[in-house]
Length: 444
Ligand SMILES: Cc1ncc(COP(=O)(O)O)c(C=O)c1O
Image 1 (cartoon, rainbow, N blue to C red):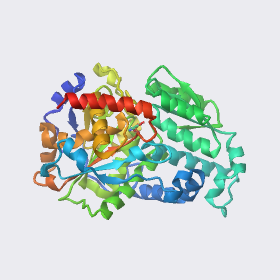
Image 2 (cartoon, rainbow, N blue to C red):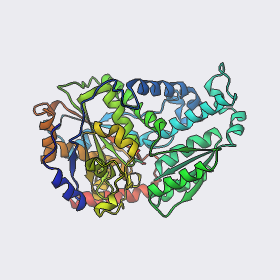
Image 3 (cartoon, rainbow, N blue to C red):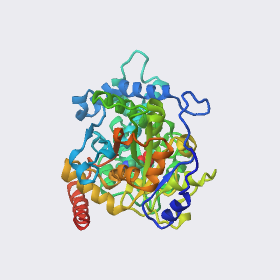
Image 4 (cartoon, rainbow, N blue to C red):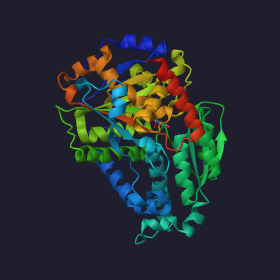
């Protein structure tokens, strides 16, 4: 793709903390079977198969999964009310759907897909290596008391802004592991409380996410009984997230929604360190190739993917270098430096990065609740920006024309991936909703 003529303007917006869209001039065409890539399409399919293998075990451990036979999944739904309220009720916008990961069972956010997957993969590998699980035993044996007492000699550690900590903590505690979660300063107190209640040790840092992860990594390095879930560079997390796209593809097919060169698919993916949106981007590309267009969404004060990818630097770039604060109510996305591993792996697959301001997150939270009865936390609503930016701004139209999509946008499917919310306590949620309501009413 030709370099975007608007990149200098985007940089001005970034520095001024104004919502913007950066189009990735280094977007590559999808090449199936690229030998330089650390993952293949088969890895995504294998991750899907692993989730299915774990399903009976998950149903045994988490009673809420009995109704779905152990499958952790969210609906893909049309949102007619929100669509009208967001101003997307025109043919120009094509279809609008929400992939409702805000309502994922067990851990209540998209981070369940990576966190639970990695913990269960580790538990299985450990049980096999130590001979606790024999080749002819079913995986459901991992929930036996003898396993729990063996696992209790090991600690699973993680650094998190909150939701990864919750998903790793819930999964690891359920299997009997000790858990230490290093939380960044941004973590919401209710996430800390919930983890403490299930018996995890929470270390609260008064520093940002990057420092919390470093502290967790250092502690794990010093002890071979500590397994560290590395949000910045874990391949297992990445693959756990990526499997979501197999289900997305099946849901689109069930709803007879085509994705092909005449029917582009747009995904709007909230981005923190980049693992969740990165895994999903990779999975989606491996299924839909160039017919899917993946956009990351970040807070105006924490656009770490944007500055990293735009700089094209080999070193890690931080939002602080651009005069930004990394302060946002979107706790899950309060990350100052993007993962280097992800920049190299999925950088060339990301169509662009949008930034959004906090007030809009709350306004969308209110709209999704009022119109669709969806309970989404602020971080999880950011994808709502996508269809408007792609359709109605000069940068968005620039992308549409560079991709040769003019005339096809009425056939497009836009998927807003809502990523967290199910477990936000009522009083906290009411405050969010009230703030969103005031902002929404002030803007009419
Ligand atoms: C609700 C929510 N959405 C999105 C993200 C972003 O995921 P990642 O940090 O893997 O980019 C997070 C991260 O914690 C989150 O909590």
